[in-house]
Length: 124
Image 1 (cartoon, rainbow, N blue to C red):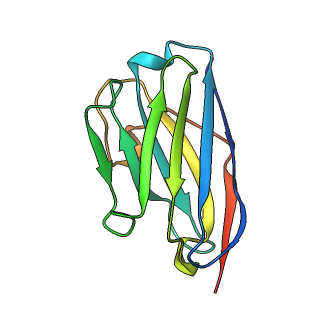
Image 2: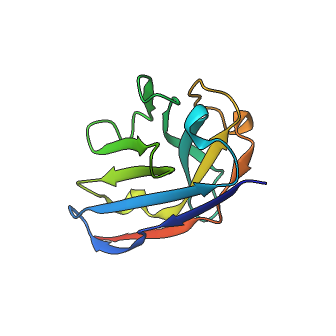
């Protein structure tokens, strides 16, 4: 049984920053890839960032490159998403997900378990 709990969402003005955290428990977190996705109202869930088990392989959506940074602390079973220079179009529910594979992926369907999500709202 895997549990993922996101935190750190909230309300911020455009140009501001937030740091999301995702705490994992239940299985050997450090051997799995992790990802962040988001879903805005009326839209499909989309890829944001992913990281391999070791952190050596990282992918970002073009829309967040240069502004968001994904990282992980395997000792704490936690993955982070540092979000800077936030824009109104970043407003969404953000989900972390675990892939029972060591390789990072940008595909929603490659992930096996999801957190409950955390709301991020960016005001213009």
